[in-house]
Each structure stands twice: as structure tokens, then as C-alpha cells.
Image 1 (cartoon, rainbow, N blue to C red):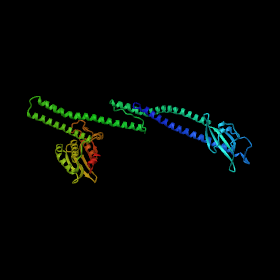
Image 2: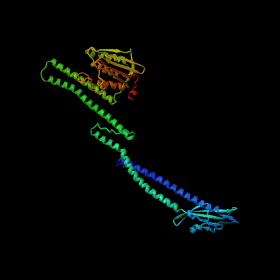
Image 3: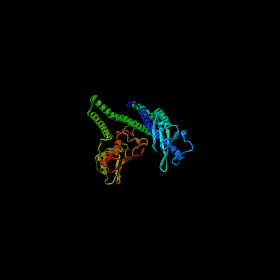
Image 4: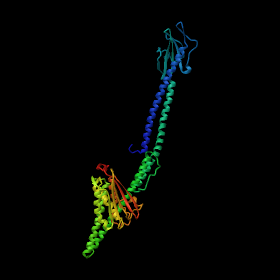
Length: 456
């Protein structure tokens, strides 16, 4: 059974169950018919005996009748006896039946020469005195022939039904499992690397149809995931290759010949800058990887968002002043929430850093904080270069940059980390932007996060 196909197994079990049901049904029909025909014969023989007894007249203790009573045309034989068991009149029947002692009001089965007979004795009384009795006898051969014919029909019908069931089972299971074969072939093609293949089966609302739909949805997710993975690998390689190339070039140039201390210092500063950039990329990648693998355990505590935002703004004044960008904070005196302080600090740094880098000279960045009983709201708005509508859906993708030339100092991971931090706090972020006029990032976070809530 283990090596059989599903189609064969389904056909086997379908046929097996059908045969079992047919056998049970046939046995029930046969037994029911046998009992019904036997009870019918018994009722008939009693009725014939009663009919004859009803037309026999008794005078002076003797039975009298005007005509013979022979009901052989209906298959019942009648014999009339007087009180001393002597035959008065009757049909010619087998001597064994004729000579039997009477057993009144009881139907007896008598076997004669491999044939079964029913015998019934009907007494006739006059003033409670037995004056005569009637014996009705009937062969069960017609019943036996009818049951024999029924057995023949059953023995022919069951194998015929088996053949029909096998043929129908193979056909129906083949039709039903055809999508499974299609799924198998598609899976093999996908196993060879063709992730673009789809089942594209008709939208049938059954188990196989649901399986096919789920399979196609899974393939869509897999293809998207692999595309993102390839893009991520390509972008990561590009981002890391650039600082490595710069470091290598600077080192080779410095070792090529005698140079003054100023040139060596400039080379070392460039190497240090690119090393820090590469270290920053690796650090951010490790953070995102830990998040993807669910290995980061948030440390939830009561924090003041206003205090954190103020500290981050003070730290970033230097970066903002280099681009002549003004930083503003619009907030209440304090805004407490249960969150991970390290992650929320990183969220402020990344959003403000992003707003400063993609701003114009003499631009501004405004951070607004507010909240209600359940939620805290963080808004980071700038009047910088803005984001086009086609770029907005992708800005949280890893290594995605609005600046396709990659001339900025960004890594393309800042907003990806922001999105991960918001997700881990069960919040959400939205973006409003107009190209050339600026952007606004609006963050909504639940104020009361417990560690168990964040793990859910």
C-alpha cells in the first residue's frame, strides 16, 4: 500500500467501502425478502385452511359439505379429516403429510425429498367437541426459486458494481487529483530556479482550489522575498565595496612613494572616515538582522519622550549647523510612555538625521511631540527636497535611496531601522511629502507597551 499512488489508494478504498455497503445492503434485502415471503406463505396457508373450515357444516356431530375442496390451483393442498383422523376428502399430497398427526393452529415445516413443505391444521368444533379438522399443506419451492433468483441477481450485481466503481473511481480520482499533478510539476520547475511559475488554476472553492490559491500566494511571497534578498545582497555589496575601494586606494597611494606628513594625514583621515562609515553600515545591518531573527529583547521602561528628543537635538546641532539647518522642538513639558529608550533614541536620531541630510541650506527641521491617554505622536517635518510619489512606497526598504546617485553620506538603512523600531513597539508611521517643498514623517506609538505585548 505504501508504494501505491493516491489515485489507486482512493479507488481501492472507495471500491472496498462500496462492496462492504453492497454486501450489507444485499444481506439485508435477502433476509427481509426471505422473511416476508415465508410469512406470506404462512399467512396464505392459514387463510386457505380457515376458508375451507368456514364452509363445512356440522350436523348431529358429523361434518358435511356439498362439493370438494381442492385448492391446488393456488398451490395449497387441502385435506379434510374426521375426529378419528380418517380422511374424508382431500387433495392428493405426499403420504408423509397425509399420515401426520395433527398439531392444531401451528404452522410446521416438513422436509420431504430436499423440499420444504408448510403444514397447518385447522380444527372444527361443535359445542366445544372436535368433529373434524382441515389440513392445508403448501410447498415452499416457489419461495426457494424466487430466493435463488434473488441470490443470482446479487452475485452478479456486486462484481458488476465493483467494476463500475473501479472505473468510476479511477476516472473521478484522476480528475480530482489532476491539479495535484500540476502542482507537483510546477514545484519541480520552481525547484530548478524558476520562481515566476504559477499554477493559475480556476478559482474553485474546494480543498484543492484552496491549496492552489495558497500555493500561488506562497510563491508570490517567496519571489518577492528572493528579489528583496538579491537586491539587499547587491546593495550591501555596493555599499561596502565603495569604502573598501577608497581605503585600498588611499593606502596604496600612501605607500607608493615619499609624501609629506600633510598628505599622509589626509590619507589616514579618509581611511578613518570610510572605516567608520563601513562600521556604521555593519552595525545597522546587525541590528536589523537581530530584529529579523527575533533576537532583540526590548527593555521596557518609563521614559520621557521630550527629554530624549531634546538630548538628540542638542547632539545633532553640529550636523545641522554644517548645512545651515535650524532645528525646532514643539512639545509639552514632558511626555511619558513605556518604551525601549535605546530604540526610541535611535528613532529620533535617524529621522532627524534624514531630515537634515536631505534639506537645503538655510532650511529647517521641526520636531513635534504630543499625546493622549493611550498614544504618543511624533512628527518630524522639514522643508527639504521632498520625496516623489513613486519613491514613497519604497523609502523603508533596505538600502533604498531617493538620491539614486548615492552622493549623500547616508547608508539607505536609517528609515528601515525606524520602521523596525516602530513595528516592534506596535505602532505605525505615515509620510506626507511634496517634491521641492519638504516632507513630514508622523509616528503613532502606544504609550503603554509591556515586554509580553511586544513579544506577541
